[in-house]
Length: 335
Image (cartoon, rainbow, N blue to C red; front, side, top):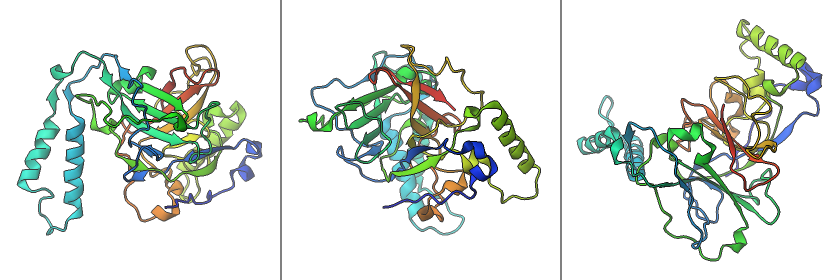
């Protein structure tokens, strides 16, 4: 499948000439439900993990009220998908009584006291091969990136809940066939549905917080004018003219939403080296503000969250990597 981002609705350099030369390329991953294998780039798919290599775990404490399991998450999604797919008379229940009973049990969850004290295995988030993702900054001797995370709310605040593993795929001779899974997870929203990828490179302009003060104020002034304007067709910088929404590699960092931008000294690895935006995990592939980025092939699609991952209350998780030492833990920021 090919997914094609429409041309931007306006040449933003014609409005702000200072933006000339500020573009960066990003690879939109365009995840869509599928059945990936260990040899595919994927979100939520199996990893090409060596059988003799320890599986990463999370030893952080988790403050949760209710728990669920991976099996319950998968069962609930399967039941709902089957229910939506079958025809039914108007004004009738979506689920059968038996299905409703199963979903009610799953929704009730499990008591938090059942969470084991030992470290929890992480779950696969993404596997990216350099052959598929042109913007993947593979360190020397590697050709793929594997990302795992801990499916609890703490992933929004703790970089230790996200694990990066760069590797050379040809060095994996025997693949781990039955990777460990956590006994419980905190939220179904942090369990990605298996998706295959349809990567596409796009050009991005910097978010407002990356612009110099004078230009940023002029861009903001135009945004405010549009809010009170009767012209609803004019595209806005944040939603349509700067960065692409959705899951992507590289490009400019996502715009800061519910809080102010981090100070320059905050965006550093724990070793003190600078970091750079690596992977953007978005709660939707497009929304009302960024609808102009919807691929041409998806113009009639209603599903804007194929991964079934929602970060926090619909935010974006930006994963940054150390530019000095690829093996260092990532820096993460909720934006």
